[in-house]
Length: 106
Image (cartoon, rainbow, N blue to C red; front, side, top):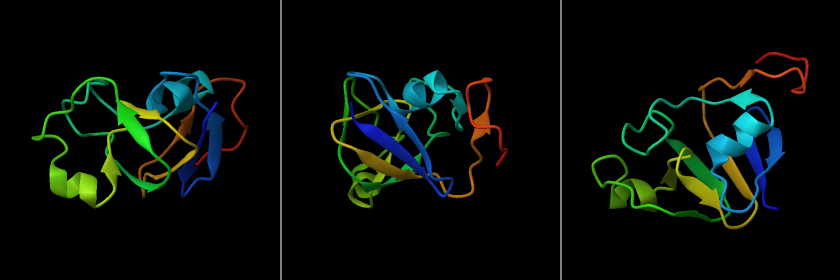
């Protein structure tokens, strides 16, 4: 299972086969920024610092264009980790939403 690390929070979760970054975070008790979860709005956009992701469905250029991809941006709601990945969400907050998540708040 690829490991997903989210900066600057240093949250680490394992992603199952064919599981998106957002779904892996949700399963582990974390809520990251997103709206549509379909890759149509760009609200979840983050910078892929390390590793590789793939998209099982096409992502519209109007949401993530070639220049943004080349700059390392990705859509965590659609991105499926191929390797261990490090993703920087910047100032976007993560929230612990399940009792199993760590007891601290960001």
